[in-house]
Image (tube, rainbow, N blue to C red; front, side, top):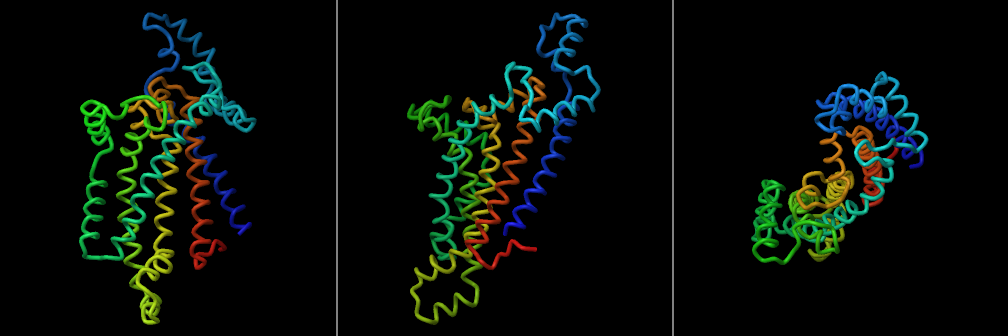
Length: 307
């Protein structure tokens, strides 16, 4: 186990290094000059060059990259062009909002749909199964942007029950959580149902039934344990994406999270923020994948982490 974890952490470091190169190169390929965006439209060429020199954009690309990577190794991710403050402080101030949103989405999806998927798989071809598959089909077919607009129109404009923007109190996260959680919940339902059907078709389940064990006990004690591994993986992948920043939803609902920060940084060509958020995303995805492998190995001992 320890050897496997060390190996995966080493692979994570390699992935992060590659991401720093890709992030550094891709943001500079995007059209637009940060120095020009920070100055008035009437700024002269000399003023633009002076701003480029101040931001360090006049230096060769390899020198800019070396300054960035050496600073990152020291815990310095640079200073935002737009906000004129350390990028790490900006992320720290925004991560709380994104973390709350991620928690709300996960609770909504897991509490509602893990049982729904298991019940559907246990009652294949029955009304509960039909309802679950209809729910999954609608959820996976619906655009989050369209759903966000629909929810705002119904619950904020017409009924005036929930706020459309802001992050004050838990109530402000209900509409964003439903917007992002609905597609995730639909996917969990579908995967949970498929896993349950596969598990119930195994020979050991038939043998368990033959020993006179009650159907409810077989479903939840034996089949569920084998069906839940793909669900755990799916939940972790979803959480990784939300922790790294849900750009569209945070922008629509004006939530001051990582996603909104990333959106503003892309608009303003704020290289330090874009690079740092991309690296943060890579770290979150890699660590969550490692955590999933470890958790699945405990849930299902047949899964071995050793090569």
